[in-house]
Length: 96
Image 1 (tube, rainbow, N blue to C red):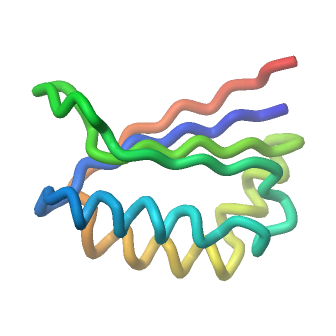
Image 2 (image 1 turned 180 degrees about the vertical axis):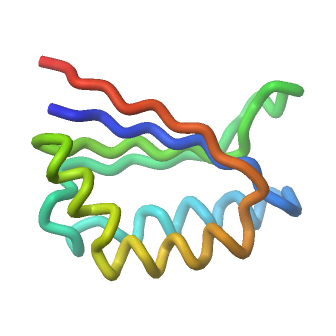
């Protein structure tokens, strides 16, 4: 199983903007066959090193992740991200 984690820093942080991004991310659930698991949440600590929103997704393989990245539903979400997000960080790892 491949786990794909992404952290998002918003251009204009507000609790409402963070919740909206979370909703947009979760809107992919059930719409992309390769997406086996999805979870998203907003940061509650708000420290200097914190990002605003986190996304955790799981896939059967690296190829499944590649298919997800070009899926039309994911591309729509990427459009929203490009308008609202200042920076991202990601980690991809394989677990048992």
